[in-house]
Image (tube, rainbow, N blue to C red):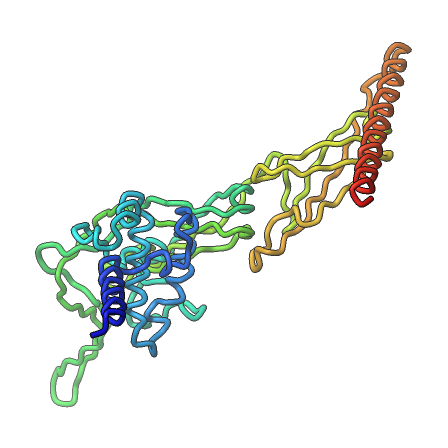
Length: 373
C-alpha cells in the first residue's frame, strides 16, 4: 500500500473510531443547537415525539428506532448533569448511567396512552368500561400567554393494583330458563358475574408537564390520555387541563390585541410627551406625541400584541388609551401660573431637543461633504 493511501486509510479509520466512541449526536436528533435552553429542548421533543411516534408511522420500519433515539436524546439533554457528561465524553461516557423508558418520557408529556393521533380521540371498545374524565382548570398568566412556558403538575393518581383474593367482575343481566314440568317453563332474569383477581386502588404520584404555547386561548384544553379516573374492570378516563387566563393588572386581552390605559398630565396632553411602556416580557415600547392629546385618544402599536396561536410569527396590536389627569378642583392663581410656566418649560425643552437634533444632522452632512471633497 502506497504511503499516501496508507495515510488516508488511517485517517478514515480514526474518524470511524471517533464516531463510534462519540455515539449519537443528540443535539442533531432533537434539531437544536448546543447552546439550546432546557425550554428549547422540551419544545423540540414535544414536537418531534408527536411526529415520530411509531403509532403515527406504521409503514416506517425505522420509526421505533427514531423514537427511541429521540427519547434517549431528551433524557440526556434535559438533565444538566447528564448533559455536561455527554458534552465532555460523548455518549460513551453515559454507558453506566440509568436510562428511563422512552414510554415513561412520552407519558410525562402526553399521558399513558399517548396523544390523540390523527386529531381524533382514541378508539373505544363499547364493551370495555371506562373511568370518568377529569377536567382541571389551569390558571396561566398573560406573561405566559405572550412568551409561552412549561408547567409541571404533580398529581396523586389512583392506579389499580392486584390484591390477594378474588372478586366478582364483568357482571351482567342474563335470562335463565327453568323447566317446571311437561310443557311448562319459567324464565327469570338474574345477575351473572365472572371471577377475577382482586384489585385495590393505590395513589401514585405522577408529574405531568403541560406546555403553555404562545398565544394559547382561554378555554383551550390539553388532554392527557389515560390520566383520568381508573376503572377496575376497564381502562382509565382522560385528564384534560383547561386553560384559564387570569386577569392582568395592566393589560387586557381581546383576541390577539392588547389594550392598556395610560394616564398623562394636563400639561402633557397640551404640549406632548415621550414615555416607555414596559411590555409583558420586559421589553420597552416607546411612545411619543407632539400634539394635543384628548381624553380617550388611542394610539396603535402594530406587532406589539400577543402572538397568534396558529402562527406565532403574526402578532396583534397594542392599543393605548390615554386618560388625562385633570385638576380635581378650581385652580388658584398661583397654580395657573405654575402650570403656564411648566407648559413654557416643556415647550422650550422640546424645541431645544429638536434644535440639537437638527444641528447634529447638519453637522453630520457637513462632515460627509468634507470627506467626499
